[in-house]
Figure 1 (tube, one colour):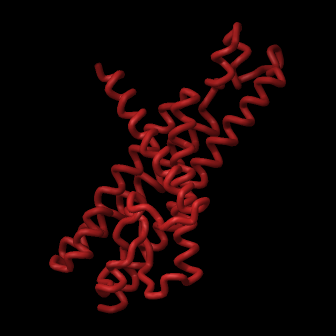
Figure 2: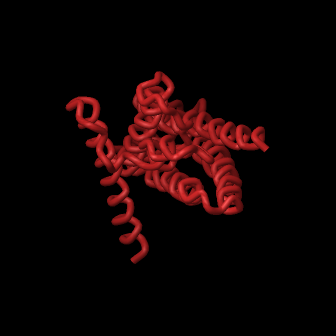
Figure 3: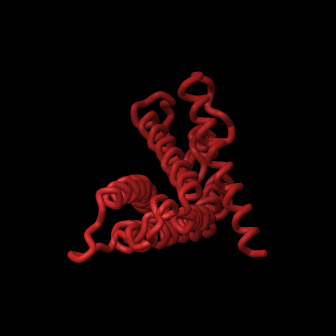
Length: 234
């Protein structure tokens, strides 16, 4: 049925994020070359061949640079690795603690907004269709603006901060469901255990989702910068 299919799909997504964490462990702790699974074409509109062929993280904007070891490039690589870690932890934790609704929405908005970005990379590397490049660039901006910069804070982060009323982790071990709610009154004050779980859970999800939002804002600024540079050349 649909529930079973979604469950299997979610497990598969969790597995891919675990794979990302293992790749990063190899990179940082074994000091090996970055694995191919985390490498993709660089986004740099109308870049020359040498810069366009440089490797960077797939699906996220980076300025082209001929200096492989510049502080800017190291900064961008670190930010991408942070994004991988945050997304992986959020996906894995949401499945382990029963917050599948959070993880599934975050995965959806990432995947769907990456579609026009993939076309932007293709048209940029082909350099054969200015119209295709322009359309994919505009579509990327709109999709990122709606999904990553609007839906993520207004639906996901807002829900975590103000709408979640129960601790999924704590309520699984409660004999009295009323004790497990975050909504307390003067007649029925919250216990210290409820406050503890509320603090841990809300803080964890806020940090993970908030971190992703900050990175999305940073990369969206880069996308705007790429377009502005091309407009100045006209």
